[in-house]
Length: 471
Ligand code: SAM
Ligand code: SF4
Image: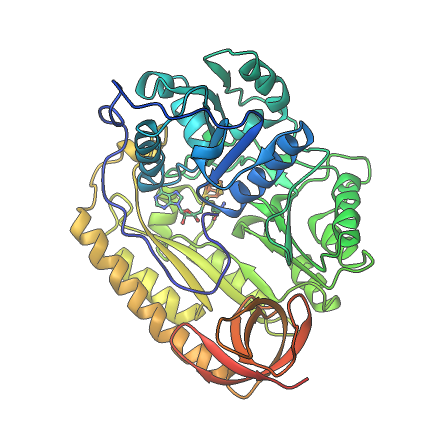
């Protein structure tokens, strides 16, 4: 879910090497003055689940009396919440650690959290000996205990268990986004896509009890949020562990009924578990947003089999049909990996033809990146980097063409927006539609942030919409 669920195209140009050699100068790094005790800096890499984990980690630290600061230099505890979905993402963490080493102040504690922590484990201490906490996301429930060890001066503290059936819940979450509240309903992943590190870095699938989800949802609404986004690597594989045994679609409907809630979103859906009752729920309840992110990864059944995606092109298209047959239009976005080992020109051609068939509203394209501990890493017939780049460009060009047409069709239509941004330009604002499109618009009102307004789209570009408020 590295994808922030915006309908923009995303360009992955990752090339490079992970984990070779050292990370920056180990010797004679100048130490600056000690920052104030009990302060933390937290930087997050990767997907919305990481963003939300960081919100929970921040809540936990604030509850322990820590104060959040804006720069690593000012913090006594510096935490990096990391992503390892592709090599480039993981590499970034080590270069950040390397950069930081040269500026490290006396007495500072450096911690690595998240997927790189889980993947590299204690190896991080060898490569970056100035790190003293390494904790994967499946161990976050132990964070208070680990922090106590760090506070006691322990130099090498780890939380690397992966065999948990618990989810990470905290007394307090410090939410960053003032308009959309994230709420994780399922953690980890039990699918075994042959290219993916997630089952390894985030552990097995664990769903949160429905009453606990709904309790937090009511708290979120009381705080003034009217839009919630349910999160999970495979959010629709949700399986309520409580005796209530709510299905995913029942949980969506119950969430929409919470007082004060106006919009309920969810991401990411796995095609195999995408069932008709989810579309029925969206049809029945307008508060359920009309957007589904349904990653396909490839349009070739042969490649899908090699990826162990558990569906064929035809089965995926049946799910699309289900969504297209809904009573109201539901926008569909996807993820595609190009250059999977052994992907032929013909296989890639099938991915391009799938784009023509489905006409996605948005697409995130990625070049295949071999990852440690995954079966695909040792598959033969690796695709050369230049060829991956060529395919990614072709994919993006096709999507741009499709998207330009889809956005143009929106011109003249009116959408309800949740206003989330005020432009520096006078009387200009922007917000999201229910289908998750961003629209910039003009309005004369003084204050619109956080309000719902009707906006008529007046023009469309290849990746943007502009309009005017008609309220
Ligand atoms: N759980 C979601 C699903 O099954 O579609 C995806 C979650 S994953 C964090 C986000 C996206 O990263 C995937 O949909 C896939 O397109 C991409 N991805 C995962 N592993 C990758 C790899 N090894 N190389 C390139 N892209 C990868
Ligand atoms: Fe990774 Fe596949 Fe699980 Fe998605 S479903 S997180 S791609 S293993």
